[in-house]
Length: 314
Ligand SMILES: C[S@@+](CC[C@H](N)C(=O)[O-])C[C@H]1O[C@@H](n2cnc3c(N)ncnc32)[C@H](O)[C@@H]1O
Image (cartoon, rainbow, N blue to C red; front, side):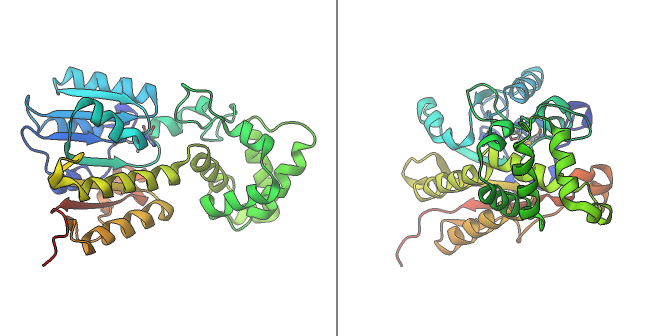
């Protein structure tokens, strides 16, 4: 059920099922449905009285996962949108939830489809958008307009690349000879910015720049901040008919420190406020066996909490 034949292997599946423990009749919200690996496992526990609500910005992933849920007879709804809009959808559906999962970032099939522009093994247009449905800017557009210092800042912040300044200058200079439109073009420019140091790098020197641009173009960090705010308000209003039910379990999987830091801080703040209790003791990481079987799980970090109610004055 969870294999790579679906384009993505769900990480930390057993640990997530144990912590979030979806049960009969539960309404489960999967904020990042992806290929449906986690959703299918959770959906298998909720019975015919439960409901699995799956959200994704990527229409192809959403359709793929929706079909899997359909085939397995899981009662479900799919929503093509960013999770930042989730409370609007739930209000319209008149639903509140017992389980919330967000598995941040991108799925393997997205990374591995050259035409999406996330990688540079093959030459392809520099797109990197998760959602193609609107008239949103892609990386080509971003690189055509962004100023040098803003670009350097972006690569430094989201890619943590020590050569951010040199890379930005190289890109901006190259732009004078014509637009940067393909993955190979960008990868070659970054490699040239690294110069002789490119050989010392364990991964391709362009890896961090590509990650930074992907995070920026999809507004991944602001979206996570909004989701955390929504969850925070949901926890505060759990006993008053808010979108998150009392005793609900909330889990977030992150893949780099820019994601994990705000999650860790928010969870710890809510615990101090008495809104939630920890379900995992700190962070849960994949074991060696999982990393061997699925090397992309290596950087996964999972944290989970359970809603306890508002902070009542003593
Ligand atoms: C790591 S994958 C999820 C994989 C999924 N758990 C599974 O088992 O197949 C992340 C998914 O989240 C989606 N995504 C990323 N940011 C999103 C956002 N702000 N709102 C909704 N979906 C988002 C991506 O399109 C991708 O399909």
